[in-house]
Image 1 (cartoon, rainbow, N blue to C red):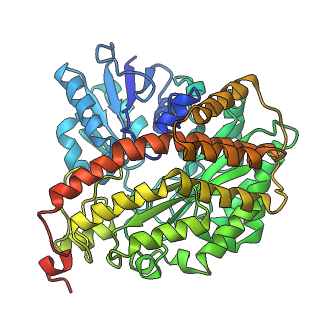
Image 2: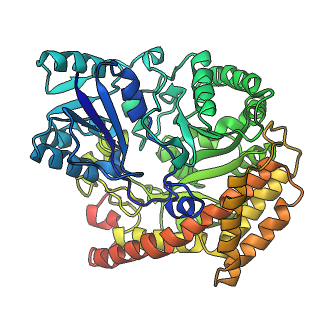
Length: 523
């Protein structure tokens, strides 16, 4: 029998983490990493497994274990290496895996005794068998994409789920689209592979029995296979009948959701209340350059409004720094987001993740700043833009963030979103239910934050949204309160951390003056 210590490294503060908002309302972190409970479910019972999410608790470097396993995304890479190196210094056997290890295994080999490349549902059990015999290999690589039926129901016993704002479920892997900058299709392929519907419902039921009432479906495109998505949504609608009406779902979709009325209706009826959409740019030339043609079908504002009026709040991923972007893109992005009523715009500079089509193209053109690990907290980019200097990109990005997240601009977007959601009666089965005592404590914390805020413009966000919430259904009320809480994070993170860092970088880059197109003669 072996004792295995599995670690998800701490994430730096980002848009996505919402750390300030979550701490304010009593949570430690946003969502758990699915890798840890999935590996625990794959581990034979004779082995002991200890799970550590460093976002919740410190890594115990003195723990008695036979093997340390560390996973992580690009944003966690530097911390992955720190943890792995420290355990190896102490004589422990260390395995590295996860998305970053799969994208850039050459950067990880020097930090690990065993490296896992690709999906681990088959290679992890194989390694454990080799480990028991004392004959393990330095690399385990899954070349062929697995059948999703081979991915077990995650074992959540080792994580304190109540400390997360939501819990995660995955139904598919892969995306049918071919966006130039996307590493998902590098990791998981373009063929959408799906779990059996009954398995997904069983996962949902197991989490609800543990007290979960907010589930995030982590699929990179929940509607990548629309036929499967409709079948699953119908099953979720049936599952929810007679159950708690406060159960809410969130996920990531593509903008073509607006083009399928049946799919949109089913998502709302199933209890989805918010979707994240990679819109990236309001500029058609930038979208076509990135091969994101799915966003160019129909008018983007019209498509977004249709999704909002159905009862779904939209959060969006936006990018500046495409080859077609000049200095006018920042004003264009701002005007688009204000009109669209997207309160939470996770805006970043274009990056080229390793081994993506964009990375290969820019490497051929000599426009990659470096092949080093990206600390992708949105304040970094590894590309040399074409129609701006690097300093101009940083300056424009910083100025746009400042403008987007002033209280007045945020209120304007949130107001549009709430009025759109209120325009038609939502068919959501999440419109009923009652508030729990813990919910009331959470709401009182948000109220106190706004009423005691020194900035009158920030206080006005609260009063305007309070008027919207009075008399609304519970789903809309929760969306209002969650967006109020989120702004507390943006106010802290953007203005105290992200923008100052960007402005310092812009000053440092200013010596590298002149548009990149001139310096590189790219024309």
